[in-house]
Length: 95
Length: 490
Image 1 (cartoon, rainbow over the protein chains, first blue to last red):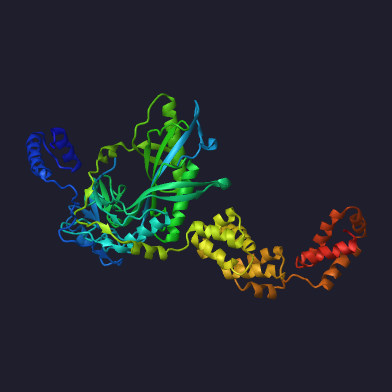
Image 2 (spheres, one colour; image 1 turned 180 degrees about the vertical axis):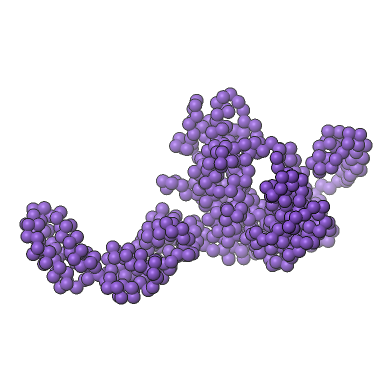
């Protein structure tokens, strides 16, 4: 598996990462190197082996349905570049 | 579903008739105290970002831990939809970029949902019943809320809703008209409310629908569909389908083709329009969420939840018909809301079921609607209405007086029996008293008496006069019998 320049631009856009034209070719090379590296796993025969979901066999941890969190709007918006009345402010997202 | 095409449901085009095919994705907010993966409150409203944990705000290093009640609610709902419950399901990340989605992905279930195929029976007008297939139900997180009208250049983001559990319930494309679609959502909402798994409050967004609409020549292969996003009332669902079907028919009859896209219904303008800006975002790049293990449980867990389910609408309806001798229509009206059904049963128990149903549906519901009351805030309690039904049954008051009594109890309250007693509303069954009234009327109207022998329908006039003379309290049966004897009418 490998990616072309168009795919690089598209996934950058989907992740909202600005990639300039002259960065596309180097990124394409890096991504393809990573993909080729991971692709080596394909050499292992896993016929009949169930996908592993955890290193130790364990059941998913569950919480009881009680309110234990919240009421910390100051902390929630503390790192936001811009806030007002505990709202996050972002550039307008509708026309 | 391969039901025969019902010509009455087709839409008339310029060239020929068209069949509309509808499938729905309903997003139902799970009733729970805290969120799907965090301990923040799910309460509606609240100060901005007050019901938000660091998990919901997607702060680095935070890990989701599932709320066991949300899992139970999804299983209960699956059971209510007579669906397959999957003992192993998997949470996936659905990736897209939007300011009210701080994680940059929604935790959802893609390949392995918690609930598989099921079905919903939907009653339509004229006694028709259709079966709507359910394809799946999965658990997922809701997003936050963006406000766009606070400021000319910025949007305001509130994450209170972010992370609240939703059930997405996907139907098969089994619906063939806007009426069927509305009836399906209504029924689904009733089931959810009975189960207590979603409050069904569409005004607060607890139930929202994405509607897939396509049209075809009757019996032809499926046409290209358009998805109308986020329709938030049952009435608008009907309108959106009608509008979209006609738009598609007009395009095809003009020689055009439908392009598959997401559209938005504008109730004010009565049109659907394309949401082109979101088109490219459809590459969600799902993958299993590495922060969450598969969700697994055994059949004993499912059985325990099944044992705790309340009686569901279909079963209740059948029982009302069977036990109380109600018509299918009346039973359907009574079971639409659990509170109404409970109210009816409280009135009907130990009494004549049909009489109870008549009073609840015709008098009480009529009055509640008129005054904008719900059954929960009814000024007349089930005990009071039951007493009124008893008084009629015992012959203490006539049906006509009962309506006056209902009015008094509605506006002033009180024990109906005492009201009847203290206001002298008792029906006069004492033959002596009625006879006196009858005799007086006969004595005053000799001409009518002789006419009545020729024309027995005049009996009604005499009955009316006697009732008037006794203030409506005379037992109508006794009046009739006496008059017939005295006037010599068979």
